[in-house]
Amino acid sequence: MFYLLLLLFILILYTLVQRMKGNHDFLMILILPYFAALCSIILYVSKDTYYYNLIKDYFYLPDFLWRWLFFIDIGKSNIIRIMNASSLSILIISVYLVFHFYEPFSIRVQKMVKYVVWAYCLLQFILYDPFTNLKAYYFFYPSRLTVQQYIQLEDRIYGITHAINIAVVLLCFLGLLAAFIKAPKLKLFRYNHLFLAISYATLAFVYIYFISSSPDFYLKVSRIAGTYSYRSLQLGSNAFIYRALPYILVPAAAVITYCAYMLTRLSGQASLKELSISKEISSSETTSKIFCHYIKNEILAIQSEVETLALNADDKDEVKETSDSIIKRCHTLYDRIDEIHRSTRTSELNLKQYSLQALIKETLSIFSHELDSVNVRLNLPPQPILAMVDPVYMEQALHNIIKNSIDAMEDTPAEKKELTVTLGSSRQWIAVDIKDTGKGISKENLENIFLPFYSSHPYSKHWGIGLTLTYKVIHAHEGKIVVNSTPGAGTTVEVLLPNITPGTSSSETGKEV
Image 1 (cartoon, rainbow, N blue to C red):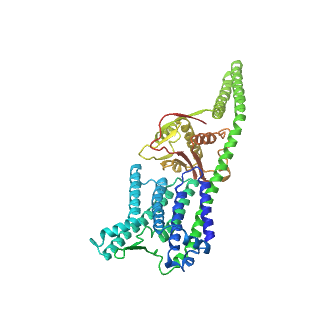
Image 2: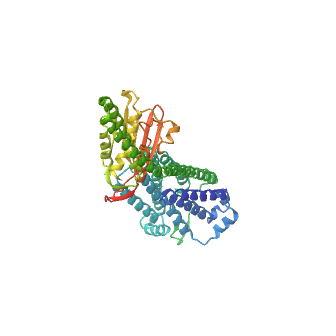
Image 3: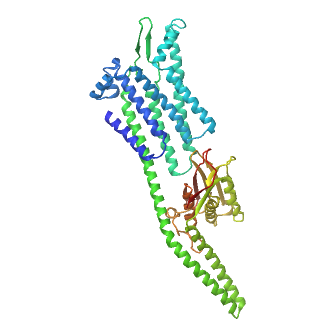
């Protein structure tokens, strides 16, 4: 059992390192003080002669390992300090973990909370240090308190700090649960927050039942005898809970490992899909450039010949009507081809801080006529949400999405036509949700909507380049776009853009698209 537990802990760390390689992940850091706390508890118990015959029943240690721990040259005072530091580190890292994914307060309040937690944990570390215990005992006894009063004081202090420590862990779990509930409805992010909540819940269980007893007053002083000794850990006369420790930790470790594996797999699938789309977009560019250049020249030639024909014809009224129709179609075709040509040229994004509320309203104003019969709902926060975007390109990307939503509701009854635009943000991402009540997209078509020249509509109206251009623009902004659709119920397009931290510069920069 011991070897299996050790293997699972190594597997957890390996999986998390692989998944979070290059990212700052507090959960991976949080596992380390848990492991240190459990090891220091086992080390402390192994040096306690009171548990000499129970060490195997409690922790299932191999004989050679128990003997090595028993004779290792490290004082109990230092072991106590390791236990206390590990236990208190769990509280600090938990608070940082929650604030990294969930922002219930302003940045200023969050900093203040972090300072308070640091000060509180540092105070506990000093208060429960064996050296402090010894000095405090000599200070209070016998001039100020009796032995019984001093012990009661220690018990009260321990009761208060123990309750606060558990409350901090439980509040952190509730914070991660709230982060999951409020996470953008993007599968990858939902799984990420769910993984964090489940993993932290298992770690919180281990903390409450096996680690929260530390820090404690482990030093027992006798002033009359001039000596001190160390109290045994309060494992209790019934060793069942500690005998069950490996059987509890193994499933908990397995849950964390499984969640990390599933998230790694999901991330890999998303990356492969993104790579596949990017390759198809890239490989289409050279061909489309040649194609567009040729077609544009041919359209201009046809248009010129039709105009010449109209001047030389006998029945000029009839020919003029026909030629005007042909010329109009040529203009339309030329505009579409020119759009393809522009979208495949290498261009540059001019990024600057821009209000997404303003960008959304500007884009919607373009469709003022088309949206007359549509119930438009805007869910925009009152405080400005700024993003580093190229307003021209990003407006075109939103334009394409909204245009598709309007087209999808073409056959929807007027009373059911509804377009909902929601803007929200978290510490890492800004989310723009555009939801319609149109006919929806089938699962087969949903997998191909970003591919160049793909369209489920007749090519006379849709050439399949709008979402391709949108995809390129959003990914050039280091963002993501996800489409969820139910045939007959509507479609939701979610655009995720990196959030700007308060210290982000507003100077313009260039980025190739």
